[in-house]
Image (tube, rainbow, N blue to C red; front, top):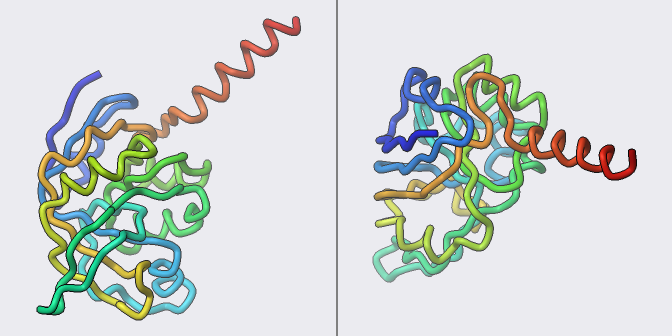
Length: 192
């Protein structure tokens, strides 16, 4: 296992160097997305107003407060479960060039295959880490589709965001599947 300090935007080579269970911290910009954002992009066919090529996307619907100048103050920016957004992952990678997704709970096999095929990674964050995440987000740089609040498309500037664990790598390895397989083997041994 190795630690990687990455700066966005990421290249395919950056992501293909990551191995299962490596740790990652990120500097630069990451995009916050959620169900409504992706429904607009994929189900409604509306192109995102920001270039997502080489990006890291965080599954979130942040708690924010609007400032008098029209910008947003961060209150609590946590991560949500990724599995329910699984159907959007192949399109994020293939169509929009997203390189990494940060979430919790993992993704399903078609997303694992898309990450292998297009050069993407799933970076797991510990659930309940919203306070730490919020501190590592230096600023909310931009927000689009405010009518979807709080499931807008967000652009966050981050410093030392993480540590994140490579839970699905660009080689088809899946930490969640490994744990399921190990648990099944233990149950067989106990019952056996």
